[in-house]
Length: 99
Image (tube, rainbow, N blue to C red; front, top):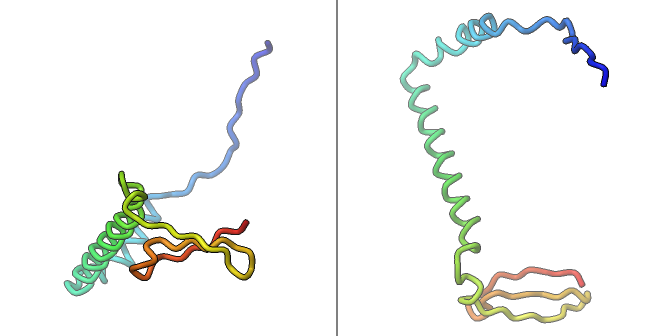
């Protein structure tokens, strides 16, 4: 097996320190206002709460025993799709399954 040397391209890397300085020039004057900081933290808290609730309802069907608690009724619709109703006596969740 012949050894080959690896050569890296001669690309100019970005100056991240300069980029950071320019970002701070724009952000810092706004961040000095107390209402901007409070609004930013409130937005972060609301996003975190939304994500936690979304994950809770996403993962709930995966909990043990979820399928056994529900009544599933299936009927064949006019368009030959199977319509599955979960808990039909309580309004139910309707899903369509193409056959």
